[in-house]
Amino acid sequence: MNTQSIGQRFLESVALPIQFVALLWIIHTIQFILGMDWGYYGLYPREISGLRGILSAPLLHGDWAHLLSNSIPLLMMGSMIMFFYRRVAIPTFVMVYIMTGLLVWLFGRSVYHIGASGVVYGLVAFVFWTGIFRRNIKSIVLSLIVVFYYGSMFLGILPGQEGISWESHLLGAVAGIFTAFWFKNVIEEDEKPKRFSWEDDPKALEQDYFLDRDIFDKTKQERLRESQHPHDEGDRWFRSDLF
Image (cartoon, rainbow, N blue to C red; front, side):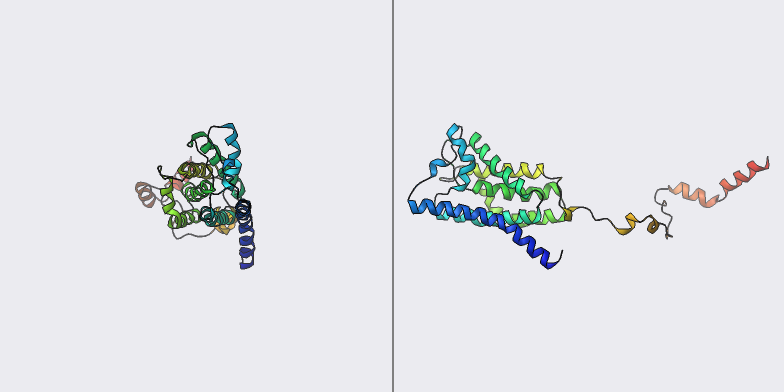
């Protein structure tokens, strides 16, 4: 892949994350200008009216600091997944988004949950666990990068933090792990094992070797017997012709 192709792919990869984060800022700006509190559109567990929060809760934030803290990792993780895991990027985002909300609706505390932090935790968990499930060089390196930059985030899954939906963090991570497992066999082109030219050219294999190709398949006794009686098979053949 040349520099121009990498640049084009990068621009394509950041486009959707930027648009999604821009949507979050537009929604919060409108809420701020109108002086309204849209928290009641959040996710309220185990209430039918709270089901709408599965879609709306990640779009709403309590204040500018809350929005900013989610915007940067959304941009980074979204762009990383779009660039390196293009085949599953959009399905991954949809699965993490919906599954996080559904799990919080089922198991969360009976309060309104808002914010995209659950989605962030899901995307971080997806990248990390994809490295564990796929175990190729690219995915492992990306896992290490995530641990380096976002390792401290995992403290956010601990309960008892006032004003923080730790359930969204924990269950978002669970959704990310499940999604990584679900797509572990949908590998990208650059993850496929490379074939060498001689594997596709039978003539390339027809060459002299310094050692017999089956030398390691023979036991020591077989090699010793062949060295002591190199013409046994030929002798038997000629003797059978004499009668």
